[in-house]
Image 1 (cartoon, helix red, strand yellow):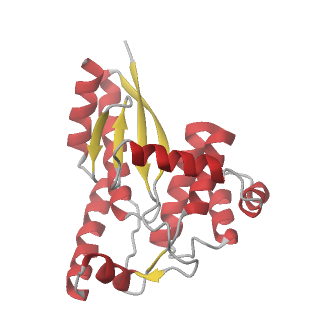
Image 2 (cartoon, rainbow, N blue to C red; image 1 turned 60 degrees about the vertical axis):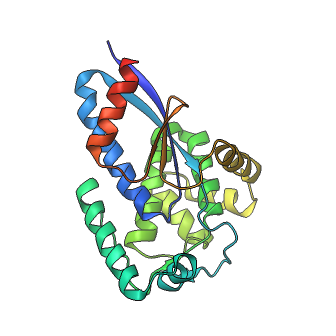
Length: 220
């Protein structure tokens, strides 16, 4: 008998650990599928930089200001995360250099909400990956509507409709409400993987950690 679990993946598209976490989770799901465990994954919004200006910020300067990291510490951390991403998500090309920028992502989250409304979990998953690649591989500007619309098109969604969603400020109340809901539930860092609305796994964990958690929840 197959057990289908509900998973909320609370994350931001400029969060490198969210790439690691999603890769690990999906590896785990591929493993436990043979054991009769399936899952429906919904991506929930979280903004790492809700007050950031549209021009974004240099990643090194941002990390130094936010965490007090030196350039050497920041570079070592980027290298470590890149290595973890390669293990968790083979084929994902993460390019985080000292000149990379970080962005406000509210509009990206509005598009992710639209993708789910339009095409369900599969469309939202495709757009999530396209946005990850737009940011971490292509290093494009995530506050540019044309860039976001290109990501939507790469995910197989209607580019013209994506432009309309962005220009008309659609789904803003829904995204704000979802962000507030997850903050109220105690989520203050991402990725946060919530299984069946009550079991929390924090951080970019290895596939083995996710797999063991999925087995325990499925058996409960």
